Image 1 (cartoon, rainbow, N blue to C red):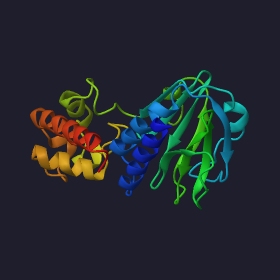
Image 2 (cartoon, rainbow, N blue to C red):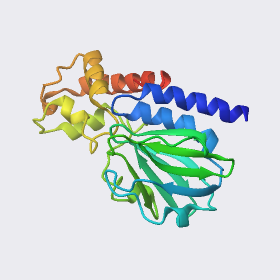
Image 3 (cartoon, one colour):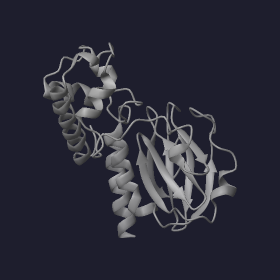
Image 4 (cartoon, rainbow, N blue to C red):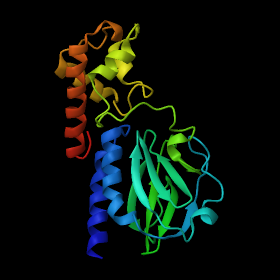
Length: 237
């Protein structure tokens, strides 16, 4: 009971932080917050009150998920992945979506669209006033799904470095800020994080991506990683 109470408090704090569009640090904060209370739990049922989100909520979720165990909670770009033995539930928070761990008996509010009921009497509740988020069931490797396969690398992994950005930028006239915000180049570098990283690395945001030297891209990668790391440590923006 104490663990669940702490989870409710923690998710409540996350709830109050995520007021603007959730970006990578906010999604990572949400994943870290719900993981200890969702991984290894059995789904007792699913309640869908509103299917019409960014994409319609996948049909048949109660039948697909009831009695199944959540094997892993992870993140790819701004998607939250609840992984099961034979499929994955992809959740995108959109512009205003939030996840909370609450007792299943908690009164429903206007924009509470989906509940994932857990076997301990609590639920993962998806709330999204603007309805630009999504709750989608995919089979097979989720990273190869149409939602994720086209995405660039994560910014906090070893393979993301200045050489990678420099190579991708060759011949590009687009502004470097737009370049690093392109999810096909690198995921999770939203507007405020791009602005801060460019400021720290001394690069004008409007400069053409193809006219920036490798040494500058080395500095930019360090700045992106430090800005995102600080935001994750702070629990979001």
